[in-house]
Picture 1 (cartoon, rainbow, N blue to C red):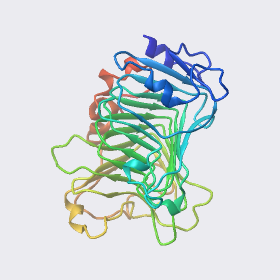
Picture 2: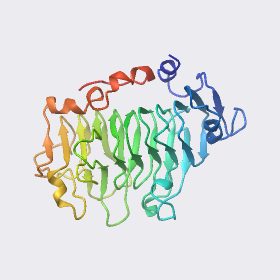
Picture 3: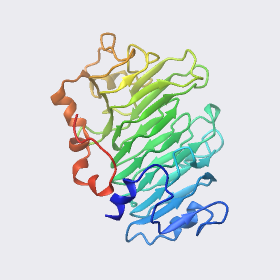
Picture 4: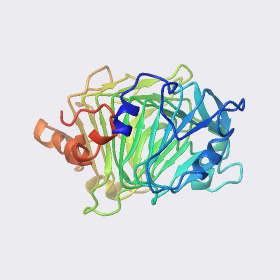
Length: 324
């Protein structure tokens, strides 16, 4: 019940009944988010209210039942600038990481940012790997590899995710609902790609589902080619449903992974009932693995069916639509 009341509140966390308050100005229990997370026992839901501010931290958590609540997706922001080009590993570049053992992680009204820029190459803002993760009204900002949705069941609602190359990637079973995906300017010679799913076996119940969302160009995009996704691994799976697609997205829709043309037969990419100047499917790729879906097929990728969300999301209090 505590969780439900928490997430059903209005924007900002000022009225939250928190177990810990973080404030850079010393008016809370802690001045860093890392210190507040360290104080959690991991045995019951621990709510951390993070007051508005820019928190330059590299945060790692593997504790169950952590909730972070900020004052707004662009008011409370966790910022880092590590990148592969700057000497980090790809996973190690992440500004914020929540690991496999930290089930039930929730973030609301908070931002995750990697400031490395397009020259940083792979530079992760958010690394998400725990089961039943929820990101509600969050911003996830970067360039290449912004969001590493690595594994297990994840739900994103009313989030802003921006980036350039493969900016949502990994092998989670993730649904993005009522989100805004912003296409940013990459390095010269590159294309912009939204999804790079890493499903490696046809028996895996993983993939990315974008529903009732918007894909649009940022003001700095320019004339770069843009695609909905490409197959990072052999059985890559991603669908775009009931969403608005900007005209900057190529008429082909989807791109090959370099040197892996055979993946076009084993992947599953689908579209259903989209709108906007980039939504037409007549010019889409003619791959065996691409599907213009009907409602029965699209229903497999909804919150209720794809991540069994009707069984666990109600207890979080987050807004969601179970079906089409």
